[in-house]
Image (cartoon, rainbow, N blue to C red; front, side, top):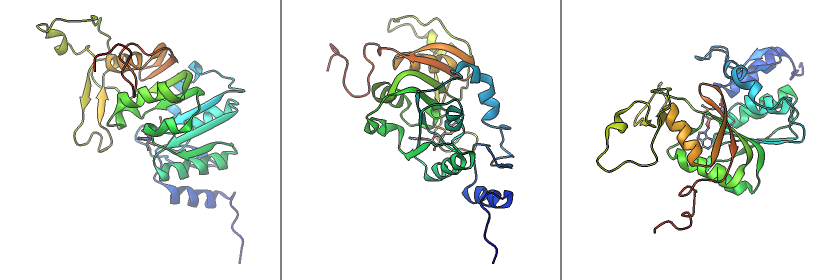
Length: 256
Ligand SMILES: C[S@@+](CC[C@H](N)C(=O)[O-])C[C@H]1O[C@@H](n2cnc3c(N)ncnc32)[C@H](O)[C@@H]1O
């Protein structure tokens, strides 16, 4: 009986297919994991549009990739020399893909099953946190941002969300009287469309925010936007959360 060569293209293809279907299209020893992706060569096509906004040299840096899926971004961070990359996802199937992809590409990356709502259990902050393509899949998106701020973000947040509606910003006032209502009808006002059933055939798409809403939510959770290199991508710096924000405790001085 012939021994199976784990490095042969046929065996890699067999194992990749057994782990599929894949959302991340990654090249593993000549085998593409999602060659017919509806978004093209995804996420490489997205990454190439903002890769320059992330430091080229991550030597000595720790990275947390939340909702890591098949591990594409975790691998890219490791390629830049990050000393530690932890990818978390709540889906076992995606984690198995990520482990296989890291092993096949020769990268030492830790992948752990963890929900974004349980990030506090890590007890660790990371130099760079990736929160890409997850916000709109959550029933409680602002809670997730608050938890990231409170527990795991040390400095840089790389954020991406699907956006729908106006891409323009709106000069929102600090306050409006009870009788002013027109601004709510302006398409540029921060809005998040609630998806009760499905969008793009995906029942895990719960929200579709516009650009102003994404930006306001980031600010509100204590993330200052320092760069907007791609329509859906924001590079943020962790700052103090504004009054009233916070995942668990009410801000000092707030009414009960
Ligand atoms: C659209 S994919 C984005 C994958 C990758 N971050 C990217 O940008 O290409 C969303 C990922 O978030 C994960 N996810 C959704 N809800 C989650 C949660 N509550 N905790 C952890 N991961 C979650 C899904 O399993 C999936 O892998």
